[in-house]
Length: 86
Image 1: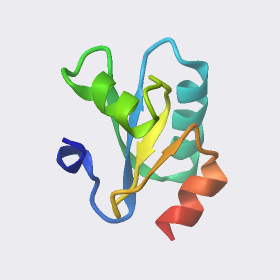
Image 2: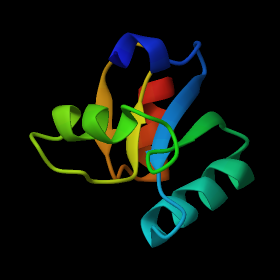
Image 3: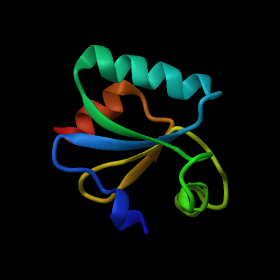
Image 4: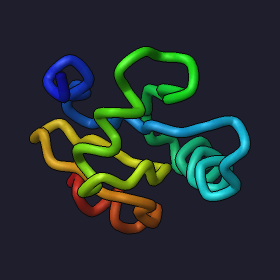
């Protein structure tokens, strides 16, 4: 299922919730830096909460980010996101 959400080159997919402060902070930083992202609310999109749990060893931790190479990061910094995007 992860393959369904792998982003195009130069962008990320971020799994989040509306109440997550870390998610709001990362979105704000991404917006300011001009990084393209698709935001998926795991409370509204069926199967995505389980995907996040699989990626995070059973934990439903957000933000979880998917990169174009299929790798992921949990609660990454803007610096980590931009470095991994190249």
